[in-house]
Image (cartoon, rainbow over all chains, first blue to last red; front, side, top):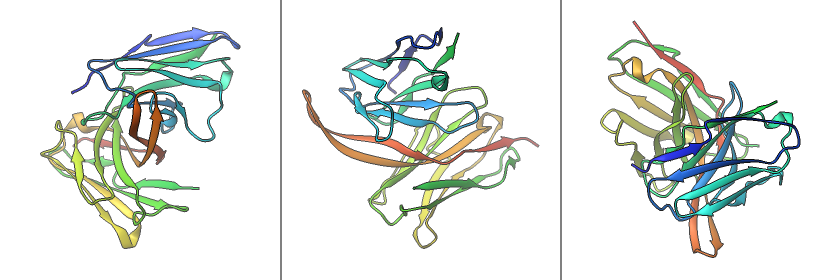
Length: 107
Length: 130
């Protein structure tokens, strides 16, 4: 199975901050990487697919980059509604696997 | 607006079979050229892909569950289902159904067929306990 490692596991930042979450995979997955946002008690929501393609309707403050084994999700200007857990997921090879999640909190 | 809704028992006894149904509505149907999947999340933990039913009719399951899982579709009812046999307490989780979309993406790497879960049900908690 392809292992997914996100860092940090959690972070706390201020409104307006630029926040970056990293996802590293145990082998190259080219650009088969998706990002999801999950708020407490809710289903995950797709933010980014194919490493850098923004899902329709998702604010442009979210961006993704990377390829191979190293990927990042960036929130350009953190707002209170961005408080959530973020997961990366590889779609290169089954079993599809998720990172352990990064919990983002507002200071 | 595509909507998915899970339904099924919230409590299952150990060694029995967990059965859930996902009803699709609002502009998408199981007849359309989409694939459908199940994902679960134990309380307080991360996400685990269970399996996918592709528009071709084929299925792909997580090897960790493969011997116990079956995903099927009931096209006339716009539903697809999950059955997980011989459950234990480790199968206690929130179970999500989701639509799998695919899109051809062209970049510096060439062209790839991206697959991603773009619509999710609200999730249903299934507890395995006697």
